[in-house]
Amino acid sequence: MKIKITNSIQLFDNEIVERFVRSGGAGGQNVNKVATAVQLRFDIKRSPNLPDYIRKKILDLPDNRITKDGVIIIFADRHRSQELNRRDARERLFEVIRNAARTPKHRIKTKPTFTAKKKRLEGKTKRGSLKKLRTQKIQID
Image 1 (tube, rainbow, N blue to C red):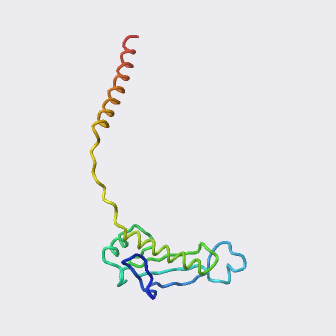
Image 2 (spheres, helix red, strand yellow; image 1 turned 60 degrees about the vertical axis):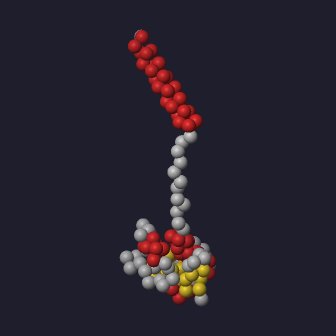
């Protein structure tokens, strides 16, 4: 089964490995019995469906969830149910991939208008004359 992440990127379901472990923290009677936390693993380096430029972007991220072998490990235990934690872990993985696929908007250089330059220079002149008045007062006394 394929999972659509963006219009151009789809992952196979078997590329994502999920392991269910016991969750820490409050949970009542279920906390010691039911494995609700999810440990999701996705091999970035060996995924055939990731384009090379996205793979490189993800591997270059300063993210401590990515191992030296190029595997991203996402641990999800925010919710009390296994299904919600599973969905949360997958969504966090997809968000990492979507962010890497996003191209940054190019900045268009602009020049300040004549009025803006004039206003800036007038402000500088006004401030300078104010400071000049202060020094004159000290010399008179």
